[in-house]
Length: 457
Image (cartoon, rainbow, N blue to C red; front, side, top):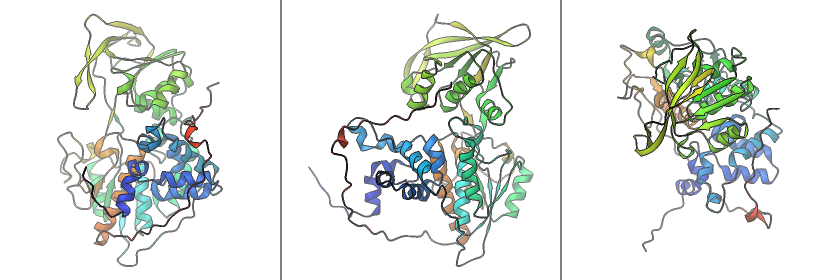
C-alpha cells in the first residue's frame, strides 16, 4: 500500500471534516455543536452567522447536505445537525449580531445593483455592503425573501424569521426597493448604465407545464403560483379533493398546505418511486403522517372536466422503471392497460421551475447556454456583458437555499475583486490543540433525535 505525506493546512482540515466540507458555505458544524453542548448558544449562533448568514431560516428549511456526509451515519444515523442549528438560533440570547459597515481603505465606494431579494441576492448584498459598497436591491414582489417568502408555507418557515433576517441585512445601509421589477430590456440596460456592477439573482419563478390535454380547465393551477397566493393571502380555501403532480419540496408543500386550507383528501402523483423523489425523507414522512396519499409510479395523461369546463378527474397510467435518463434517475415507462381515473376537484402542477430571463431577450449582450440559462464563468459568476454577474437559481434552475446563499457569497467576492482590482486575498491560518470534549459515557449509544412537528389540530 502506498502512503504519502501531506501538509495539514487549512485545505486539508476543511476537506477532512466531512460535514463542513459538504456544506456549500463550509459551516463549522462540529464547532457550533460543541458550543451547544457547552450551553453557549450565543457562540454557536455566531459561528453560523460567519458562514451561512441566515441560521434562523436554514435551521428550519435547509436540505442539510452536511448530514449526508456525517461520519456518525456510518454507524447508524447522522447527527441532527440542521435541528441543532435551529436550537442555536432559538435559544441564543442575542438573536442577531450587531452590524457595522466596513469601508474599504483604498478606492472609491462603488454602486452595485442586485436584481432579486431572495437568499442569493440578500447574501451577495450583505457581503458587498460589509466590503464597503453602496448596494441597492430591486425586488418584484411586495416583500423580500424570494421563494423563502412566497414558496414555502409559514408553518415550515414563519414570516417573522424571514423579516428578521431581511431587517438585519438592511441595517448595513442597503437600499431595498420592493415592487420594482426589472422585467424589460430597457430597464435592465438602464440599470447596467447607472451602476458599477449588477448581480442578477432573480430566482426560478416560472412553473413548468404538464403539457397534457385538459391543462387549461378551471381548477388547474401551477404550484409556484399556488404557494404565492397562499403566502400573499389570496388563496384561503380549496375544494374537497386535490391532486398534486410532482415529487419535489414544492409538491409536498402544496399538498400539506391544501389540507390546511380545507381539503378532505389530498393525493400526490409521482412518476417514480420514493427512492428517486427529490423531496427530503422528513417532508415525505410528515406528508404521510397527515394522511396524504402518494401514488408512486404514476403519470397523469389527461385532465377531465365537466360541462362548465371545471376539473372533475385526472386520468393516469402506472409506470415501471427502465434505464437511467439524463438526470441519472431511472426513466419511468408506462405499462399498457394500467390506465385509471382519479376523481378530483383541483389539480396543482408542481413538476418543476425555471428562470424567467425574458427581460434579457434581444440585444442584452448576455450569452445563454444551450439549455436557455444565462451563461456565467464558473468561478467569478461573470456573464458575457461587462459588469454583469448572475447566480443562484437564475443560472441553474431551482436549488436549495444553502447552495444559492453560497453563490451569493462567492459572487460578492468576485464583484468586489472586479470593482477594486484587488487580487484574491490570502489568509494565514493558525491551529491550536483543544481539550477533548467531555461526552456522556453512553454517547455512542445515543440514537438520532427526531424533531417533532406540531399537529394540524
